[in-house]
Length: 363
Ligand SMILES: [Zn+2]
Image (cartoon, rainbow, N blue to C red; front, side, top):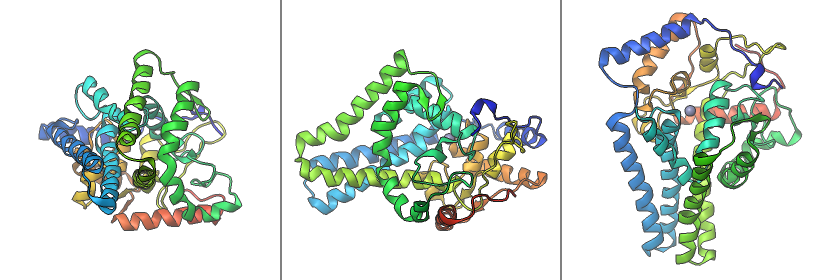
């Protein structure tokens, strides 16, 4: 497998240059700023109130097991919503103009259990630069139980992956919070990739975030309720969070319309970086205002991958420019019309990878 340092994209893409100028012209002509502005601050307040309200009611209101279960699902959905709409933009630097505010809001992922320091290495660098390149994009390497890319080794049990993947989704936050983060923070390595170790403030905030998270999610409930009552609720909350976040990230890249290009023996990719991002990413349900709000623009992932430093509140407008520019340059732009068609495409891809041919032709 190629290492990140040896993989290169051809430079000088006129498509990318023209696309950037057209998007810049949009911001110049409308007078808008590429960060989130008041819209994302209002959204943050709504999501925070949703999470805190659900948490307080689940802990302190004696509403019976069914309603407490629904409140726990609500906590999982609110946590995922903050991940999609606040921490994701903030850790890309697109939440606000101020780097300090971005860093502060980026810390929300630490409060919700995972290290922002590790996330920025994994997501901003490895996933965003080397999207859908097996061995480099860590999203494809989540588990050896899964075969998500054509060049990954096919094993007999993969033929059932579209069935057992739901269990992996449901428990993956636990693995992420307590195993992966600890190992990666301690070793300074994510799989075979090394990254700057967390030291000083970065290490203190990573550890402080874990303490905060364990306190609100586990210690406080244990002080108020018996363990036997909490265990099924924790599983329900973690399962909701895990399934929702995993599915949303899968729908953009692990679907029939997405490509999985590979570097040649010299580490050279065939397409330019921007063309690569469009080829490996698929939008979905772009007309759904409710989904677009909740998913923080993760249904506009082509736009996000091309412009990660533009806040998601602008993606519906930017998507029209991206789609038109792709048309002008003959770059294939892929979008599933609905959430359900995207889910069906993801399941088709998982089944194909589980039992299909080892390699797939590039378009
Ligand atoms: Zn991102």
